[in-house]
Length: 456
Ligand SMILES: NC(=O)c1ccc[n+]([C@@H]2O[C@H](COP(=O)([O-])OP(=O)(O)OC[C@H]3O[C@@H](n4cnc5c(N)ncnc54)[C@H](O)[C@@H]3O)[C@@H](O)[C@H]2O)c1
Image (cartoon, rainbow, N blue to C red; front, side, top):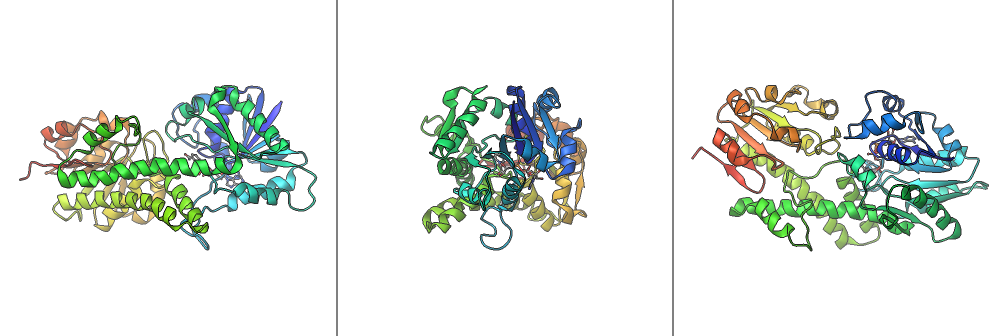
């Protein structure tokens, strides 16, 4: 029986391994993590992350061929294949601070693997890593006179939070990079066989190691670049009375452009886009490629501009003062269908509103616990209220910051009636029926469409 160990039981390690366990009942999958609380949560009825469809898959496989453990060494020792899915956040110190990836967790894993392994293993980079990381890993793994052979593969993960289980079950493609050597190709085939259990073979792409590593950063940079591109146009729409929704539809029907990721919004968030683009910028700079670095950096600058512009618009429209005003934030997660708040635009928006002395009420169906941890310094100015109706009571404005479907179905007449007048609604996700809201009596702002106002 093939034994897989995954180091890192996070947003990637948990769902990906649960899917492999479900699809390959003859493979034993053990997910290990140094965070014992997280491991305990994976074994409980309340999983540590929210992801539609995940509970069912974990229920089906847990204890059958899916195991969670905090005994990292044992997991490593027993495995034939080790996925490393630890966090690779942006470095906050020293060389490359603010841009480069912090690789200390990855390297610690490599050292641990080398230390405790007594048999040959395939090591799979699942974390997103700078191109050529595998080279450094191989040096760590093979340092000294270690008789054990490690073959490193790159298998970047393309799932999106909120749709992770569907993405894992029916991926557009799976990418596996390996060395062009006999052992490299053999290891690559082993991993191809596992994915081919449920994924059509033509969707399992193989590449050289460096291409696979670089493809993940490139994919995220391209996706984020589309968001920043349409957001740049949204600002111009507001200045010219063009409608960004109409522009997006007009260009998205061009088959060369396509419709996805053309939805103007408050901007992208999440643990990956910003981190991965900044990493790409750092890589370009470290290879002396200043113009490519500047090109990609602008995608992040544009995203920051869009967040700041949203708050400025709120302030400007609310008579240039929001001091003491109650503002209800609908949605704190960085996107719908996840409780993840890492790099959520809501964090910067709340900070900027608090700097203007607003009284903030945060509401979110899944992200309240994370939200509380994100803004401890604003404890005096923030309330948390899960019920959106109560959050909006007495508020001067509602700001939609996450595209949760439930916000489409709320009784906005009831919300309007309970608010201070004039009641403002700022739709940072362009997801509501703005004309209907306007007819209820709201002052309605939406991105790339401007303000619909009764106050002339
Ligand atoms: N979140 C996403 O949507 C997503 C998508 C694709 C790729 N990625 C990439 O996947 C990687 C993991 O992301 P994530 O969101 O799952 O991170 P995460 O922070 O949710 O999980 C990482 C886990 O690794 C554990 N860990 C760290 N060092 C360890 C060690 N030495 N031994 C054992 N466990 C250790 C941490 O305790 C944590 O639970 C990152 O490189 C990320 O860029 C993330």
